[in-house]
Length: 146
Image (cartoon, rainbow, N blue to C red; front, side):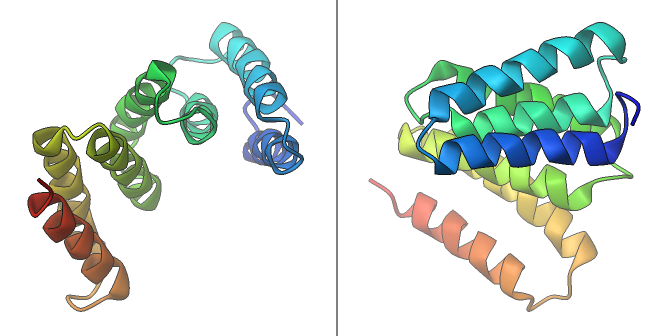
């Protein structure tokens, strides 16, 4: 497989998940950082494989780790440049960023990202789809947060 092969990226993400499930979160992070370094050296910085590894890192970092939001925002930037490929991945990234801000009690930022995600969802799902309903629930919960 070539370095830009989608299946290779999925294998890397699966290895990181395996490490994480074994309680080896730091090893999962180091594995992803190593692969990210290779990708950034050999691929264009707007390549989807880089976005996926950054998104995985965002999942692995703890909520109190500033690298979490940095990874998620970098991933979102790449995903938005390739929006025609990955609507669902963009929505997932937006929701993860919103949840990060919600745990930090930065309500305005959380709502901004939740609202961006629901705008995309409304374009790709039927009106009463469970995904839209769940995102609206998250928005309502955030608005009612004190």
